[in-house]
Image (tube, rainbow over the protein chains, first blue to last red):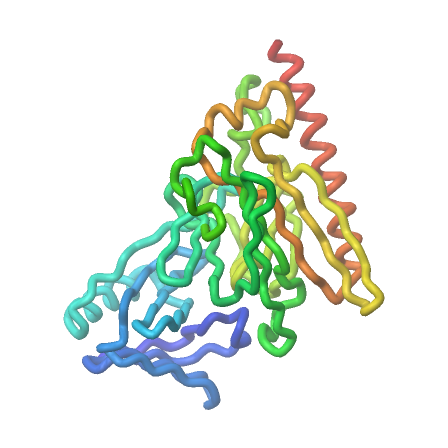
Amino acid sequence: MDVFFNVHLDPMKHGLNPGQMRVHSGGILWKKQGGGKAVEVDKADIMKLTWMKVPRTNQLSVRTKDGLYYKFTGFRDQDVTTLSNSFQNYFGISPEEKQLSVSGRNWGEIDLSGNILTFLVGQKQAFEVSLADVSQTQLQGKNDVMLEFHVDDTTGANEKDSLMEMSFHIPNSNTQFVGDENRP
Amino acid sequence: GGTRAATKTTSDMIAYKNVNDLHPPRDLIIQIDQKNEAILLPIHGSMVPFHVATVKTVSSQQDTNRSCYIRIIFNVPGTPFNPHDANSLKNQGAIYLKEVSFRSKDPRHISEVVQVIKNLRRQVVARESARAERAT
């Protein structure tokens, strides 16, 4: 079993209190320090594990077969190596590695996987949005797709500015979404 | 600055070179990093940088409910940043983020953000057109 302290579960959603993560042969368990929120993912429910370097730390994403998506931060580079070995040993899963784009560009590609839309710049992830948060999509003109988001006042304790709408411009020269522009 | 080639276009401008040049997020609130000419937007729990040169317009609006809205429209092909921008030619086939709007409960913060983005954008546009002029 591997134990890591000072691991944050999606700090923007669940506050800044760190917790303890245990990775054991049966799955992953995270418990908030001092009690409260806990996350338990059984090894049979894990669909995908992903590492990404984010500012000053490493982020582990855990996607489950029933569509849940957890993001944990607070791992040092050496933890990534240790944990990747454990994931292989315990679950038979090799985590994927993603890179974060910080170039600040607004053009790239869209990748859809499950209900997650990823905007990629130069093959690196610029941002993700969950299609579960989208209340409506609209085709505007021939080339623009607008996504409207649910804004829930009860979630996102740290959220002061909330994303309401986002639109993508898909030029005619793009061949990725021919005939399917309404559902990017 | 200084070392950039005169022929550089806005499509070559980048906000950050490395992930660790960004600060870990503290608040999900729109922020401006003047030094890196970047606007940081809270999207799905992360702070996402955009270089100010990608911005076409920014505006805000207030409703009766004490909520206010900020809308940022980005440059997309067909609306070039300046005649020297090879953006749309270089990135054929790309998909563009065209527009984002956010709701905020802090009108003062939003009007400040709009002002700072406008000023920063003006400075960058002026600098880049001066550079493009020198290059011709």
